[in-house]
Image (cartoon, rainbow, N blue to C red; front, side, top):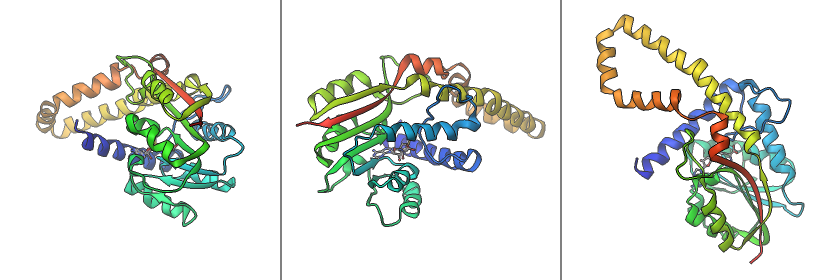
Length: 280
Ligand SMILES: C[S@@+](CC[C@H](N)C(=O)[O-])C[C@H]1O[C@@H](n2cnc3c(N)ncnc32)[C@H](O)[C@@H]1O
């Protein structure tokens, strides 16, 4: 798929995810949940796990940080939480839909860069630039240079996101930059790691929940809809199934046989919190 088409479908996916998540499950965020021991792995608890993720990130923000650039801030729920805690927060968001929500939520208190992070132009220097599950969407060959240009000397880079551990990546969940490439680029950058925490196990639970919801809800619903359609328009259904046979086969492979459970995520991905300091 061409990059612009890929970008559009990703953005629409996030928009649908936000609408469904907020409307049905009261989710404010677009990131994974952090599942602490004792929290039942249930879709209805996802909002609690997402809040735990925010608390975890907040607890690792270095004490001297006062100003933050929240990159790929989604609809701004986390940014607002940080503002309420006393931080001065600006945001980067390339999506029209999310920008409207952001303006409503943050008002004039924050500058919103309505573009990709790669295209941000500013003279401002922040104490910290932060990527919560947005790092994987940004061009890895450029992200550290741009980050270095917007962080003050001695300031921080916070990344909470997942990476690919191996090539080939056989996990049915796409996404994540290659961890070894990131590590090698980081070594050549002005940033030095001061904290590196692996939260793969606490985040892999999200995949088990998603996998179960797909198998127990989405597939039976599609199956029932197909039987309904067949009872009304068997010929049309046959034609449609033939026309879209490749897409249907791909979806069956992905959702029924794809390696999309928590154990696959834990095998092929690494979800990390990195706090780095700009030392050069
Ligand atoms: C999974 S969401 C995470 C949203 C939010 N940080 C959160 O924790 O809920 C990824 C976000 O990255 C944004 N994004 C995608 N590509 C981007 C880019 N090149 N520059 C900045 N943000 C980008 C998307 O618009 C989306 O808001």
